[in-house]
Length: 234
Image 1 (spheres, helix red, strand yellow):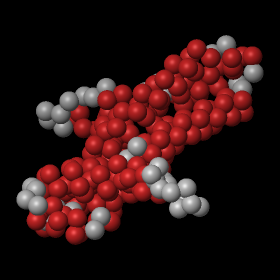
Image 2: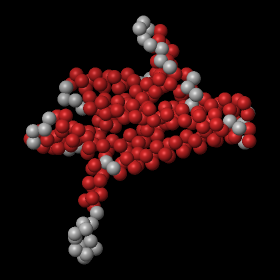
Image 3: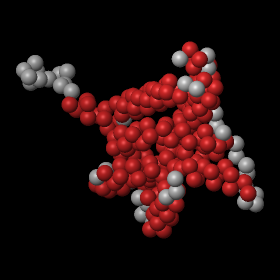
Image 4: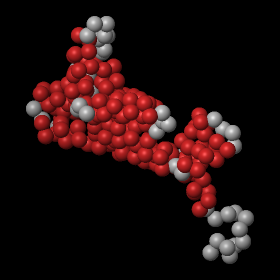
């Protein structure tokens, strides 16, 4: 154990890389999921089909295969750039998370009563205003909890970035194991660190759920009124 503790600064550096990659891919996946989810419920059939084909093309191969393709094969095509290991990892994992999150967004939007959009149309609101001011705030109460579970899984996806040389916590832990031969201790420590990261991610999304407009409105509706008679609250 003492031999492993000597490498603690390096482990912390690797942990920071994992946190940075996780934050970037979760944010990127959230933005991409909203865009793809909106396209999935578009009124234009061609857009719906193209978005569905794109989602299936990305979701079909494993994330590791996509990562290898972007990092090793893509630069071989004429005019294609050579991405750094970190950039390739963030791009692939964010895109992979976006296509899975798109179905969460689609289901959340479709869970909102169609009458809400019809009422917005009757009030003279544009489709964009109806979506951003009425439909999406209500859909988020369905989207955020499910996306929180996906985000916890995405943190564990980051373990594959070490295959292209990103010095995340797994990459560093493997080097420490090779230097100290403390396989059991190193991998137990690694499991604990991933567990802590996923728990913290879950807490963040739980707090995010509390501030959603619909959830706040529901809590306010359930709370006893401050102006109600004393006997009415019993």
